[in-house]
Length: 263
Image (tube, rainbow, N blue to C red):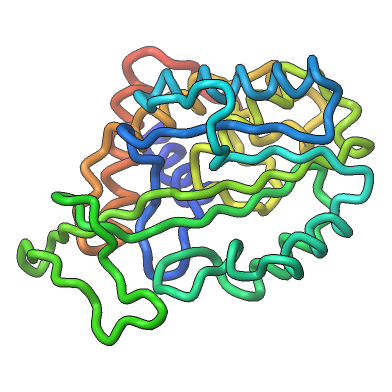
């Protein structure tokens, strides 16, 4: 079926967790705190408000004003230089020394050197799904924590997002509207999205900088993907099975009446 194939391709194309890991999500109880700097105050507030609103839609708690941000949106006139400076200043903030934390060194190099209008980097933490305790060996520890197993096919380890660094190149992003930019940032803030450019072949705000007539904001496909990711049971041991669970849930939402792509 055409729609099923498109949903599976879309999920596989845009989801980009660290190698060997399943998709990470923000944990509902700890939630998110969104900060924006180096923007005009009204633009910064609009970005914070929109990302927070989308986070609320998927069931996340949103921090009050003054909270310590774990989603940081930074405006820059020279985004590669800023990215390089941030990574050089705090390399462990981008690639902590434990399994499953972030993308590869090569991926981080691409984050720094990218010429895209918006770049992002996520940091995750594998935790015990029952207790929320750290589920990997941290630097200085002699052995990994015990996590109760659930057999060969399922696991009690889940991957929680802990930080998202998002840098907006002010000049390169100048050709899009603020609502478009805010929705684009909301999606990449809440999901480990591939940094590779589109188009992705279905209606998605991820095509914002890659097609001549992009959507005005989050599409039904984007919302269905977000809802599927945050609703999914991701305790399958195989990351491919976790992606399949997301695709199955998304397919049901798409077939229930969301927009269909055209040829």
